[in-house]
Amino acid sequence: MSDNGGETMTDKTVLVTGGTGGIGKATAAGLARLGARVGIVGRNRQRAEAAAADIRREVDKAVVDVFVADMSSQAEVRRLAADVLDRYPRLDVLVNNVGGFWATRHSTADGLEHTFAVNHLAPFLLTNLLLDRLRASAPARVVTVSSGAHAKGRIDFDDLQAERNYQGGRAYSQSKLANVMFTYELARRLEGTGVTATVLHPGVVRTGFGAEDPGRVTGLLVPIARPFMKTPERGAATPVYLASSAEVGGVTGRYFANGKPKRSVERSYDAHAAAHLWSVSSKLVGLPEALPGAAARPDT
Ligand SMILES: NC(=O)c1ccc[n+]([C@@H]2O[C@H](COP(=O)([O-])OP(=O)(O)OC[C@H]3O[C@@H](n4cnc5c(N)ncnc54)[C@H](OP(=O)(O)O)[C@@H]3O)[C@@H](O)[C@H]2O)c1
Image (tube, rainbow, N blue to C red):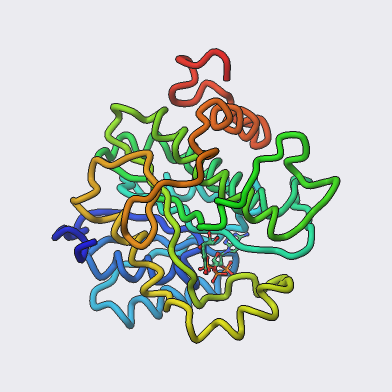
């Protein structure tokens, strides 16, 4: 991975979800440093304004906009999308970074399991709602932050909401596998539009990850491992690269780790399962299925 392939991001507009802390904030700062106008999304206005002020302090002439939405709620994701469409006449890059680990099962305002809702359904819905703007801004990119944990994931279509048996690690891995399969299906549906879709593992990064509802690993082992983890800036290297580099300008439907393309777990390439996941997700967020490419796939 070179710096960013020599590109600047001047005149580009980027939206980073989960941009108020951890990897997302470092990604927003990295892209602002390359000259992009960045929008950061978080749940709390004060925290988001403070993060924007940090980025402005850190990066000379940074243009940072704040968006506030609790992305566990579909109504809030819809309001966020409307706000973005209103404020951004063009959108060059969407970085779907929001995500986390919760050790116990929580229900969202929509009555859905929280990990699946925030980590998968929120980026799924937001991307779909912003797709026309991204297409109109082509060449454009959708970059989704998954995790190496996707490799342990299984999409349990019989119990997607983990009503029978919730385990934090299992729910997390499932949602991160869903990020990978969503990206591959999105790339297929966006073929020929000039909008690319890539997905990545950022590495093991020292952030607020898992702090809201820590389990055994996040609560006990993470503090011990913290000194050996990547800084958020190093964790942001791959999302910044995929969002900005000319080297990956036309690359789509690929998984990256440490700035390099890598094969994701074998079952993530199951196109039939990915189309089914798209269809089920559309129903769960109340989107018509006839979104990009659906017409060519009557079976989905
Ligand atoms: N850290 C790691 O080692 C690691 C490894 C692999 C993958 N990842 C992935 O990297 C991504 C970022 O993780 P991180 O470690 O940087 O986490 P983090 O430090 O906990 O940051 C999470 C971000 O998401 C926002 N957020 C959380 N819930 C939200 C909600 N309901 N609505 C809107 N915003 C919400 C938080 O903002 P507010 O609190 O201000 O709302 C914050 O900006 C995640 O997708 C994670 O799965 C992380």
